[in-house]
Length: 111
Image (cartoon, rainbow, N blue to C red; front, side, top):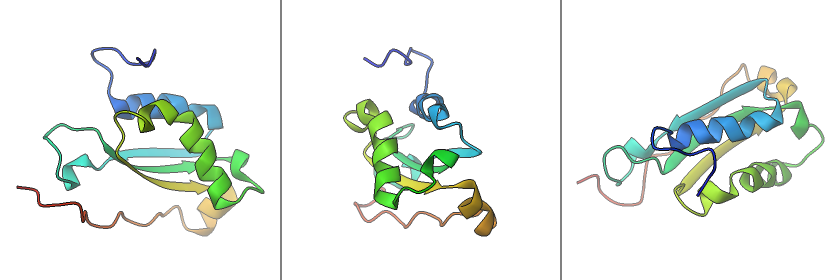
């Protein structure tokens, strides 16, 4: 079991704690599980915007691998889907501090 987790801890808060190792200029973790065919209160689908100098000179794939490595335990267990927006501070400011919305769920009905 994840040493950060306890009975009152959310998956979202664990993600936030773990991603602080990137010394982010901006970090946003959004639980989008409600948009998918999962039980109410689920924490399985996340949209993450992570802005860090540590991504400078790295490809998009390398950046995402860095994040996936840090969240390996959660990806092997509770996280089903992860939308990652990994940017340098310069890229973040060039985009006006905006990231694209997640696409609608195609994995089944909400009924």
